[in-house]
Image (cartoon, rainbow, N blue to C red):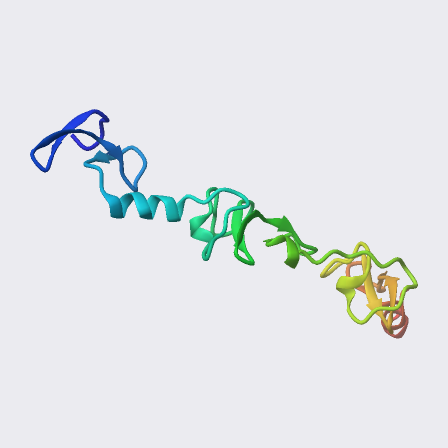
Length: 146
């Protein structure tokens, strides 16, 4: 039976079963399957070519991935997405610092209250007259804040 470890007949010899590619399945020792298992079960720090090779890999969210040829744990970027550590953009510029994009500013958020790059400097967004939408201060002033 393929779901139980133990002895089986392989090439007319009594042989100890080995676990197959799918966990919990067992069969005759097979060089190709053993090579595939080795290629698909890389540990953190091992060399890889695809994320599927890394143990703990998930298609999205927390987990491990192949990052620049090495299995690594994903990190969270400024948008809350899980990406390879080198791709995790961190927002660190304080209010008043020069910027080209909101992602450079500390406490940046895609929408709502938070900081953004406004007219080349990190600034806190201001609520418009509705109190629901948040804009760079110059834009909010044009829209009216009362």
